Length: 136
Image 1 (cartoon, rainbow, N blue to C red):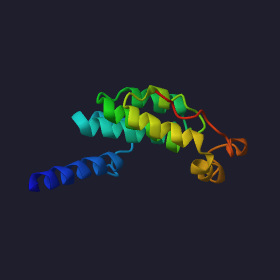
Image 2: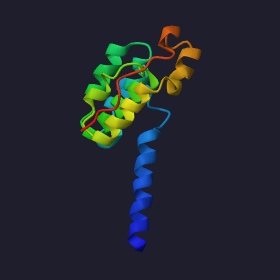
Image 3: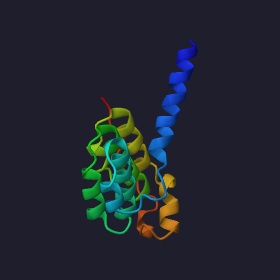
């Protein structure tokens, strides 16, 4: 029982590691200097930030991620932070639970109104309704 708590704690650390990265990860060159999971997480972080100003370049960076789960999280992050009115990034996610969460973002416009208010999305995107979550 005690080992379950330890494993749970380590899983939490892994999840937190996927959500935050060193502030020094700002460029593609920073990522290329890394290896393994750190490199993949850097590609995710830099790819999403890059996509905010150049979507094609950001997507190309996310495509470089080798770990399938980190890549899935990259597509989820791209949807949430850059393009929440399109389900096309959700379709690239292999992990079904994460893909479902991604589709929820697209289908709930109130979850991305802040992007319209910040000027990162056109006003006509407010109120957009995406496709319903995929059913088995």
